[in-house]
Every structure is written in structure tokens, then in C-alpha cells.
Length: 316
Ligand code: HEC
Ligand code: HEC
Image 1 (tube, helix red, strand yellow):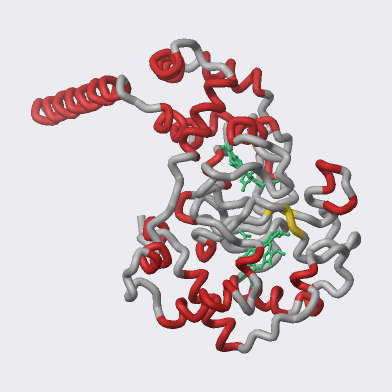
Image 2 (spheres, protein in one colour; image 1 turned 90 degrees about the horizontal axis):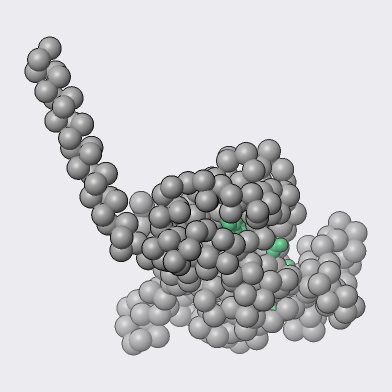
């Protein structure tokens, strides 16, 4: 018994020691680290059941695996959760581009009734009632938690999720072995015959434009995309061109999450009419079938796999 007590005593001291160490370390907590704590904290949802990380899962490049994610109370959204790596250089956010900055974007899911459903004023009160957060915000922002600092910290964390170390990047830097022969052939198809590069260009494979690839028919496919924001009929069915880094781990695909695999995406681009016969306003680039052979589709798929950052291919 005495022995057991002294073990408890020692364990207790060890735990105290750890806490003391933690608190001390918090002094050099960065805004990015605070952002990560907030990103993973369920306190930011109405019933404390979900956090940003419930839908943006690190193992899937901060996307998720269902067509549309579930918010508080199991409510269904209408769009697929996009991966949020490589956001630093984007010029607009959401599939329809309705937020112009990351700081503006990150507060929206908190208030969104089918996502976290928590009024921002309530989010701030909860943070102010939490001694830990009060301390962190004081050290990092010189004031108690408010929406501006909350947005700043969340955005700072998201800006750390840049991925640039992929087989493709190493191949570009001159390592001939970094990509398979199939992926190298796939890159050529991506650039030319597949016309992918006409829309997916730049270091992150997007030029941040809004384009219509034919996933709007006004009936079964009724999400008007960019049009809902601009009310310009030319924008009907246009969506933000997503970047393609880590795309191999972010299935399902597109704003509606209806394509389950990269092969389905490639089959779609090859013959869009077979999937959506009466699409409205489809981009002229996709007016005719691409005429890809099965071998070319394999190669293109191999190239898309070469865009995965090693961080997402390792098991945690
Ligand atoms: C219930 C699931 C869910 C939760 C919780 C959630 N998101 Fe999202 N997120 C989405 C969906 C779905 C979209 C796309 C919505 C749209 O385009 O209309 C999105 C879009 C985004 C984008 C824009 C990505 C882009 O490519 O433009 C960012 C950044 C983001 N979320 C960050 C966050 C942060 C930060 C939180 C927590 C405060 C959060 N999300 C909570 C589902 C979720
Ligand atoms: C006309 C411009 C355009 C062309 C050409 C194009 N894309 Fe896209 N791509 C887009 C847009 C816009 C989306 C989002 C569409 C949506 O959700 O409705 C998209 C989405 C995707 C996605 C889904 C990404 C995700 O996170 O859900 C993949 C993968 C993709 N494209 C690969 C390709 C490949 C491979 C090619 C060439 C065969 C190609 N794209 C050609 C504009 C284009």
C-alpha cells in the first residue's frame, strides 16, 4: 500500500512537472501554433461536437473523404470539402470565390448554420471564458480574444500548409529518377493533348480563374457556382479552378464530390457528354472529346499521383 501511494505521488509529481513545462513553453507559442489549437478545437461549434479538423483532415491533405461533409447535428452541406493546402497564394476562397482573403474566409464556417453554427459573438465569449486562450491571445496579440485575432491565428496556421516537396518538384529540379516514366509521359499529356494546363497552370496548378467544365445543367446539377456571387450570366456553372497538389489523396472530387476516383475525373474530361449530356455553358476547351487512349489515361493518372507531398503518403 505504502509502495502504491509513493508510486502515485511520483506519477503526480511527474504530471505536475509536465504541466509546468507545457505552460512555460506556451510563452513562445506562435500565432501559427495558436491557429492550429483553434483549428482543432470543438469549442468553436454550437454543440461542441466538431472542429475545423473534423472536415479538413490532415491525413487527406486537409480535405475529407465524403462527397459533402456533415456539420453540427449531422446536417449536410451542399459542397465537397476542398483540401486547404497551398492556400497562401490564392486570390479568392470557396468554390465560388465569395471570400477575398483567408482572414475573411476562416470565420465563415464558424457561423455557417450547417457547419459549426456558432455566432461569432458567442465564439469570442467562449474564448474569453477560457483562461488558457485568454493567456495565449494576451501574449500574442496584447489583448483578449476577438474576431480579428481569431481570424489572424487561423489564417496563419493555414498558411503553414504549403506543400512543395513532391516527386514532380524533385523531377523539375533535375532529379530524373524522381518521377516514373509513366508520370513523365503523363505530364506531356497534361500540358498538351489533355489541355489540363490551360486551366491548371502555375506552381499550384491553378491560375485562380473561374471556369465551367460542364457540371451545370440547370436540373440535376443546379449549383450555379460563381453566378450566385456576381449575378453575371456568363458565370453560370463556373467554379474556382482548384489547385492539384496532393489531389491523389483528396477524393471524392469536384464541387459536388460526385467523382470518386481520379480515373473517373479523367474519363469525364475525355468525354464529358457521356456524363452530362445537356450541360450549360461548358468551356470551349472541352467542346470535343479529348480522344485519350487507355494507356494515356494511365499515364495522366500517374502524373497526378506525382503531385503528392511526401507528408501525405507516410502513415502517421
Ligand atoms: C462541416 C464541414 C466543415 C467544417 C467544420 C469547416 N469546413 Fe472549411 N470548408 C468546408 C466546405 C464544404 C468548403 C467549401 C464550401 C464552398 O465552397 O461553398 C470549405 C472551404 C474552406 C476553405 C476554402 C478553400 C478553398 O479552396 O477556397 C478554407 C480555407 C476552409 N474551409 C477553412 C476552414 C476553417 C478554418 C474551419 C474552422 C473554423 C473550417 N474550414 C471548418 C467544410 C468545412
Ligand atoms: C476549362 C478549364 C479546365 C480544364 C481544361 C481542366 N480543368 Fe480540371 N478543373 C477545372 C475546374 C473549374 C474544376 C472544378 C469544377 C467543379 O467542381 O465544378 C476542376 C477540377 C479538377 C479536379 C478535381 C479537384 C478537386 O479537388 O476536386 C481534377 C482532379 C482536375 N480538375 C484535373 C484536370 C485534368 C487531369 C485535366 C485535363 C485532362 C483538367 N483538369 C482540365 C478546370 C479545368
